[in-house]
Length: 281
Ligand SMILES: *[C@@H]1O[C@H](CO)[C@@H](O)[C@H](O)[C@H]1NC(C)=O
Image 1 (spheres, rainbow, N blue to C red):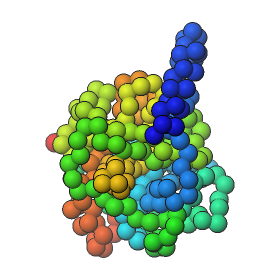
Image 2 (tube, protein in one colour):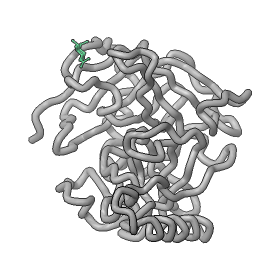
Image 3 (spheres, protein in one colour):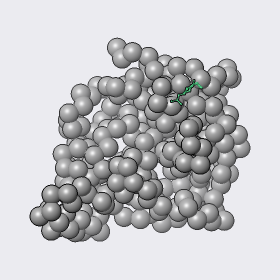
Image 4 (cartoon, rainbow, N blue to C red):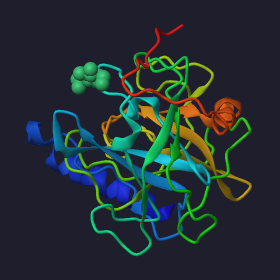
């Protein structure tokens, strides 16, 4: 915690020092600290190629919820015209901290089924959540790969939470290759202008240079519940990338637990190319 605060303060100072130059105020760091192995064993990196340029990757994050399912954001699994991407294209990387340099701990698999929430809406963000079934089961429990314990309780404003992800150093820039942990307490219901509903929450700090960026979507917010980091939110927006007054926008896991459980036993095929967006209620 102390370390995180120091990083944030340092980052703010750097931004302040640079703010003389108007072009330089875009923050290049997001705060946070690097994790160590086993710190967040349920967090996976998800990648797929951009359809038009298949050697370019689109990155998202996800969280292992049982031996062959992960939870991510619905916006990670469709293309820009809201068609479901073929599960074949996804690569799910577990057990690794650095996503460029593979280690012996790395476990990579593919998706076989993707189920998006039936009431998913892209803008305004609503029910932005999806469950992916993996081709190979995760070797859980394991020191560096495990499923998350899902939160079931209402947590108050100020609850200590952390976001775990890779993301990028700018909203358009290169992926941050090492896994980071960002201090992100639950805050009030103003997520930087987006009107949120009951099954969402805001978390983060409103200070500059402490925020999430592109590449993190679908990643997990883990809150301290009686000393355990419980999976509490799925990142769905609020990508200020460290700009002031923008917090992370999350889908509240507790509100989706029943729906998530129902996906585990579904056997219907998900047809690539189907439209996943439905108009918001
Ligand atoms: C999205 O996927 C659909 C169905 O596969 C395809 O027809 C469409 O061209 C894709 N859109 C983009 C922008 O690639």
